Amino acid sequence: MRRRNFLEAAATLLLAPRALAQAAARVAVIGGGFAGASCARALKKADPRIAVTLVEPNPVFFACPSSNAVIAGLREMDRQRFTYEKVRADGVVVAPVAAAAVDATGRTVTLADGTRLRYDRLVMAPGIEIRWDALPGYDEAATRQMPHAWRAGEQTLLLRAQLQAMEDGGLVVISAPASPYRCPPGPYERASLIAHFLKTHKPRSKLIVLDAKDLFPQQRLFVNAWKELYSGLIEWVPLSSGGTVVAVEPAVRTLVTDFERYRAAVANVIPPQKAGAIAEAAGVTDRSGWCPIDPVTFESKLQPNIHVIGDAALAGAMPKSAFAANAQARSCAAAIASLLAEREPAPPKLISSCYSLAAPDYGFSVAGVYHPEGDQLTEVAGSGGVSPVQAPRSLRVQEANYAETWFRTITAEAFG
Image (tube, rainbow, N blue to C red):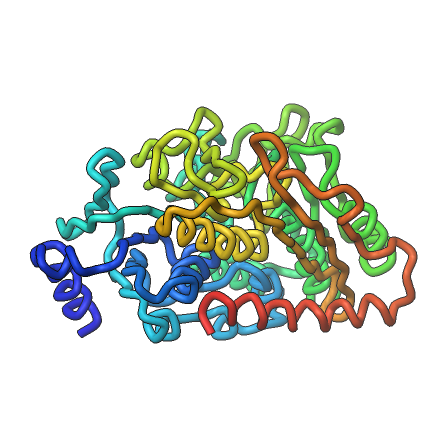
């Protein structure tokens, strides 16, 4: 029924010139994650007359924030599951079909079933794509042996099942990529929560993090937590100590660096990433694989009338996170509403905050405010805040509780 209703609505937009002449502007949004769903809803709130179509083939969205707790057996997957019912209730037409092509000149999106959507403005929020050519030996087939679990869903549950099936005394190896990638502190939160699982259920086991970087977000907080909570359990091997993984051998769950071979009982390979594939097809990615944007409107610097938000965007100092995606979505929606009304968009101030867990009752956070400066988004001087390195355990417990409140708030903004 939902698919039929969408196709009827699409036919009305495409085939009824009289209706089109009377209709308000048309905005298509590709991608139904935190960025896309938030932007679609914000557009309708900014101007209910805008005809908004959200292109998202999956009927269910699985949230990445808090999915590390699912991997560690601390949370059930149902709590990560969201639908688009509230998005539809806001007056957004949800197209349950993948976007196959974008014609930037003709301002059309072609869907996988052949349907064409015309737009006045297009918002692309395609998220990430794994760079399958970046790590020798790692391809889609390899994910069945060495899951990345960097898109929540089946991979999350596979990694959890592998950990649960591993014998006590087994070696878990996580590889963390060079920047940029989705959720900068994510690999280290994952290492922490997996270490909590091992300490609780498989205490003779060990975890190694092979890292393509020498520095990572909230490093002092994580390292202090590891010393306090998991002494001798976690080993971090940075870039300068040969931590970069240069190849993998899925059949034997082995990760290869320039100096060592690590054969793991469970191997979590977080590979290099780029913007979702449809972004490249639309011509909005540069050589980096990401999408350069105008910092005020989020309009692509490569294609007119196309805006890019969320993980796919090169957003300067802003991290690739769910909160950042939501902030960009609301700012982009306001800018598009202004542009459609032939008004000058106001320069935004964007807030981003992120909570990380080192244990179920041990959390910390980082926050920042960003604004356009030159041709990119930069952090407002003095605006950032990070949890204190030296803090009473009561504060860590409090921030762990705040993390759950943060999750409920951010998911409600997009889907609730």
